[in-house]
Image 1 (cartoon, rainbow over the protein chains, first blue to last red):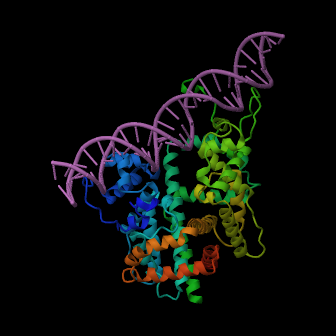
Image 2 (spheres, each protein chain N blue to C red):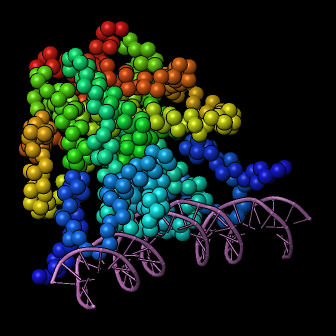
Image 3 (spheres, each protein chain N blue to C red):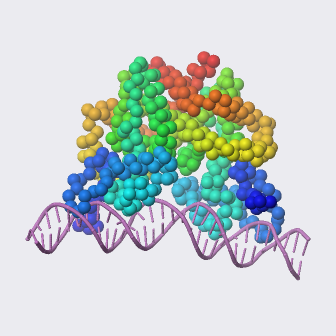
Length: 251
Length: 251
DNA sequence: ATTGTATTTCGTACGATATACAGCGTACAA
DNA sequence: TTGTACGCTGTATATCGTACGAAATACAAT
């Protein structure tokens, strides 16, 4: 053997996701933790304090072990985050909607929106196409079924799903940002406005940006007045359903 | 004065964005750099090596100054990134499309897509609603004009724009990820597949995930065959335009 | 001309971070 | 009983953002 002698095998990401790890040779101390325990601790941390608080140190601390202990269960931080996401996908709500494809696809969009609103860190962690873990596979299967047998080609089904999930993510991110800004500026809102009004009035004059000023004001007032946090989702969902309907009827 | 005596004023983000800084009292050594020089150096770094390579140390090095020197021009790294984004928005292509609102909105979508493809870091840096810098304002004004006077309310114009920009960002992120994966797996593709095939075949059986396996295979082959990197954009764009048409005609 | 002072620049340092490495102790295999 | 594979952890390295204070500078005031 050359250098490959230490075959010891850092587990591939897929093996980790599917928990298909080579049978441990049962020697030495028993494991005090499990992959799932580590993943769950990390998810709780992310839910409570955001993804930037998920550090190996803090996860280890919440489990009562030294930081380096985590590396027995997980090759590194990036893999841990993938595992967190797949765990979330595995247990997310999968509404079985009655009715036609519109109702089914609307349910898919709303389930995804609810997931991203409940776990805002998932939006920033998720790479549009996550690796093929068990959670992602179950999610993909369920979501494609909403689009199956309605006259779309297989490729169109995949395109349509990516299209819907794309703007759902955007809508959730926008709502999450609105939350954050509302929370941050809760007290300091008046004072922020006071200190920035002169500049904004000087610079946002209606001659240079007539449309932006008019529409921005209208949108801002609508948001403050009767704020429906899922407004962006519902608007986009109706447009997306209508747009897909045009494709389906035409085909 | 209490503790607010050191009025020295770290500049607010808005003042930085608009370059409306309190007139410097002309004392001490002349400035060797400008905000724009710092921002441009950071953008070049991000374009060349990605956002994770934009560190205060590296930006400073590329300008030939010590790291702490940057803090004379910019309060911190997060503000620098906002400035980078607004600079990009300020000089991005703004196609003046002939024809109706469909052509105008398609041009908006494609301009944004081109921006995000040329500067992939912008997708990860951008918070859905960027602060009101000069670049963002000019962008917002131009994009709203594509939707003005076609029968939408002001609030609907804002909604429609957010909807389109949302899935454009998603499409660009997906394409960028595909690029990355293609580059990473270029050499190791065969060997990755070899080492993961047994697991995938075991775990992705067509009984548990019939739709996912069928559609995933079709989509994968379509991508490999005649790969159109902007495929996701064009699909979503047609659906979005049709969906908005339904809203406009109904209204 | 001299002195004072506001400003730019930068060396050093601190507290984070991920994680490589090597030692220690455990508990099964032989 | 002993050897050893493996779980656990203390220490160390290389990053990062950035706080702090000193040195250098060039104008204002005298």
